[in-house]
Length: 571
Image 1 (cartoon, rainbow, N blue to C red):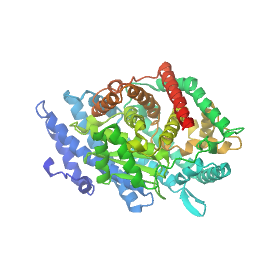
Image 2 (image 1 turned 90 degrees about the horizontal axis):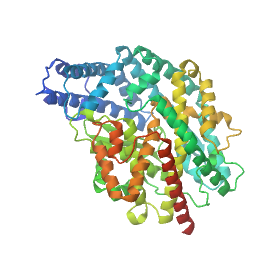
Image 3 (image 1 turned 180 degrees about the vertical axis):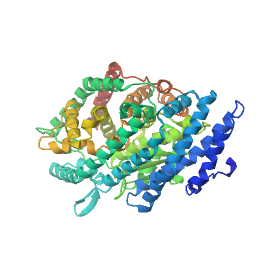
Image 4 (image 1 turned 45 degrees about the vertical axis):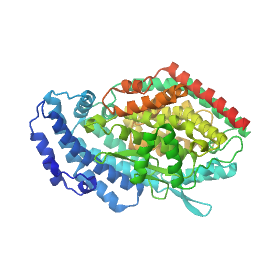
């Protein structure tokens, strides 16, 4: 029967539920024994991969063009007609394998994941989960439609990013204020959407018999190796170790720019008065040179990127109507990743492509695992793959090694990255702490004005060194513009934890780059077959919320910044 399943997901995308359902029924009715459990799991994987890829392709379609009404219709039809039924059918198969008592090789962690998913499964939640995905798509549509008129042209807010690097402070301020004004125009519609998000998520938690949405989401994200309390402890460590380091960076920036106070539009301009880095003008140049950089890290990883280029799996340039941000998803049945981003010609675009490339390499490295459940990796380690690749690639940014920059420019780029990394940890703490508060206080947080107040409180706790006087409204509504808060609740602590792991990989690479890359690749190849701490350990890092480890990494970053600054000064 399964020989009749399409090998091409593009053909499967046109299938109705009446065509799909018999395959789930056959799997549910087939008797399984130790001798045939592997073939049963293979057939299940084949079917699940086709369903998953169908949704991912439909999602990609509505993000590459948020104005495509036909793409939205197909996306919503899938969520209404196939997603709930496929989830119910998947649950039957999960219960079947769990009740069988079988434990195939390399399946211990997948069984743990399946058990957690079964514990929170609830038929009544299926339409709510579909609705939540639609709300997320609507949020992306709202953000993707935000444009302003700049120098006589309609531009997206992302396309304003290069202006923030210009030396003309008045120009930077004007661009920043115009962007903020445009964002504020959508304040009410995002507030209204937020209320809907909160209602849906609270109902999902109640239907699952759980005390709150945080508990539900913890299980949904398959977090077994740390608790909400560990996250709060990590926030505290960041406050004690990283906030002072970030403040030192902000103070140095203010002094070098000769300012009385540092304002939000002063954070990206070069403090030496040098022109902004302009690594590329066309996306083809971005791909070509990032390919050379990755080849320096490892030729096989570069071949993965070349496969994506040849097969049209990169959508990189920013344009009107495109959803914000960047992501890498996987087309499971095709065994291929897809990278989406919004490039506008900045060094940040270089880092983004390398970052998302790390996710793509994760897909390629684990593709040989036989079952889809073994390829399910916690986001905590997925981000090690991406941030780790950014750091492993940093020695290859120069023109001599195929990259974009002179030695001085490469040093500037690395300074920009390391400073951003240090300043990111406090921001991550704001985003994560905000979400802990939201879902522990849902009746308070459903009122957007209360969210404004809490965001401001957390901002003042962690984000010191930048003057927001006269911009209080723009500051308190910052939570509205953080996509993860709306579309991927609680998906943010991963970046902070992974950054700590990735910096340890980088520390190893400073001693032995080749071994660090080999350890990194070995960890990626394990997929989701071992626990999170073992994945970190295989990659050469310690999974930890430890304040002392964080201190060591921050000190290494600050020392490296000093060394790089001296290279820039001497050039």
